Image (cartoon, chains in turn brown, orange):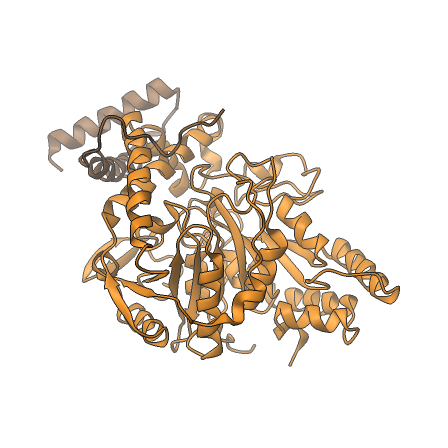
Length: 63
Length: 463
């Protein structure tokens, strides 16, 4: 990860904490950032997989 | 043989026929727990009074010729995320142990006790089940009975350690991404993760509703089957539980391999596998006869999608606790949950869409085979406290990677038995996987492997 990307991710953690009303100890930030980085890397793998627009999620609700 | 070394099937037979009293069985189990638990740290609560009272009830029923169930007098224990009446359901956490005591047992406990089994306590686990190690900062680590310096695996660490250490013949655990199969592999016992939606989760503390399963660990496939049959059936308290008639499997175990087509998972499942893991898969594959190697579709992506769904649902579940009491979490769990809460929503939606695609492709694969063999863990039980796992010469974070072979399977809820292959000095597990609702297939194959000695729960060193 480049310094720019690392900074961007750290900024995203700060913004996420603000939006979710979470108070993060500065000492936790590197670990939270590292975990988010893994999740986003794996999420990218999912994101890249092409699926048709009408493909239903597995979580659909039955009334 | 000591009573505590008998299987659940043997105990139930002896109690039902009057050769052993339930009270004697429970007294022995409680003594064994008292003797060995200080070293193993498998139990967090021992329900001795309740168990003794329950044993007396079973003995009275037998004395008066009343019917007793198929698990009469069998001691069992449950991961401490199951509700036990009178105890707070701690789910491995510091925070939840301050909750009010549960007012009712979990449905699966009720069903096992209705079948004559006797609850003797609650078992250690990784915090909030977000764990593959069996370590717990609040209660101390579960310790592997085969080597006390090693992990049990998790998150159902106490469930694996208690059975492998002969404290109980039967335990219940939960499995979201591998939390029954990983401790079964590291501790050298049999573990069943049934089809998603088969067993009700009512009265258990969740981790990831989309992926959570409950199931048993035992020293034999027959014990798994007996326990599974006693627990089947719909319960409206779990929205994912399917209204499907029970399909008992115990009577089908002796059908053997006849007519079953077996495939061995290649590609992804060969990468990062230790020599012990490869040896275990080879032994199982050879014992199951002619087979072909299969390439499962997009497995790495399936694992990634399971990871995304787990971390985000977990983050959402604990969001309020993360706001109010972050200092009371295990730091490793806390930081993963916080990060999970920050994953963009479209990735979760895409993961759920991919899940349906992957399920369809896997069901196509099951047109040509009845079961798939795959490793359960990359390696044998690591040392307690280890942070990295070396796969194919590359060091990787241990906590995130122990479940690389289990996650793509539970992702679509397939039934699996993890069978222990008794390598020396440490056992390792192999997954036997079938199409949804075919627990009969995985248990038949496990039974064949047990009968031929390929799979067995090795005894830990005597103390």
